[in-house]
Each structure stands twice: as structure tokens, then as C-alpha cells.
Length: 249
Image: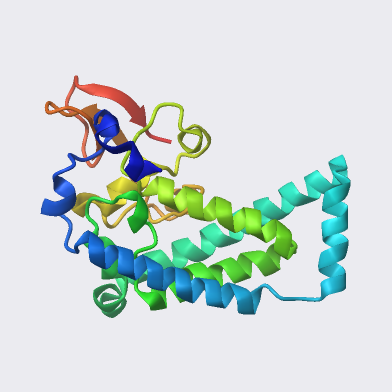
């Protein structure tokens, strides 16, 4: 969908379109192949992982069909637990992969070949990273929350769509993720920039762990003279003027 929007959305881009080729260190064809491999590995892992006692899962599904306020409250609690667990797991491993030179050079650097992120590069990772962070982290969130396999379909779909939006490179007006989460497209774009690569490790929902461990970097959205926007990290006090919006929380 983001790619289909094409040049009509250039005024909302956080980087000029030409920088996708000039700054990124991997061609889009390789990104597509890497993402397809990632999807294949994770789909196989999901088929293996999301199996359980059919009686308990069917009971949970029957409660979901009932549509009672209690069942929706229980589902919201499960989603909240899963989000918290996944955020903590991803922050810890993401930051460690930046601190460990071997892991960064041979594993996590794959993802940072995209200095200018775009939507279908959201899951362009080394397969080992995909298994360790996404698959195992997802399985841990699934087990800790106690959600049913059916509920997990919606949760992991939310995670995937959120990750795609975080990497889309577009600051679209009215974007529901930007309205609900401080951890959004611009926040993660800062992390992909060279100046911000040691900050903003939190993914995919909240900025809590960045604030707790001192790796939170606020930013300002500025208009580029050539058109569009840019997320500038606030590493020092910004110069007056030019600032169209500020995200500091």
C-alpha cells in the first residue's frame, strides 16, 4: 500500500526519494529476497510453535465468540502483557546487538544497510536475528500472555503492520500509529541515522525502556527546503525557527 502511494506522498517523506538508492547499502532486489526468506523461516516456526491443547484453545475461542465485556477485557489484558514482554525482549537484544561488535558486524548490520528505511524493508534482517528477536520474542510474548492461537493471529498481525509503518519513511497526517504511540516512524528513523544509531532501540510499541536506560533521543520534524520533512535528532539545543513539530516525550 505504501509503495502504491508513489510520488503523491513525497511531501510526507522523511528522506528524499533519491536517497533510497544513494544512501542505502543494499539493492531493493536483495531486500525483497531477504524478506521472503525471513517470512518463510518465521512461518515455519509459527506452524511449529502455535500448537497446543485443542480443548483449551477451543474454550478460549468460545469465550471470544461470546463477545461479553469480560472476554474483551481479558483479551485487552493479554495484549498488554504480550506488548510489554515483546518490548522488553526486543529492547534487550536490539541494544546488545549494537554493543557486541561481532553480532553487529555479522548479524544486525544487515538491517542497518537501510539507512533510509522503506516499508517492505521492515523485516529485512539476518535470519538468525529474525529467529532470536522476532520468533522467540513472539513465542515468549504468546506464552506469557496466555492468549489463544486465534488471538495471537491478531496480535502478531498488529506487530507486523506496526513494524511496516515504523519503516515506511512517511509522516502521514492522521496516522493512527502516530497518534497512539511515541514510538513511531520518525522515532525509529532517528535510530537508522548514523547520528542516532546508539539511541531509540525500543520496538515496536513504547519508548519506556529507552527512557529507563538513558537511550531515548527526542527529535524535531523540520521542513526540508526541497520539500518533505526530516526527523532531526536533538543531540544539542536546536537552532530557533524552522521547527514545525516537536516530539520530546
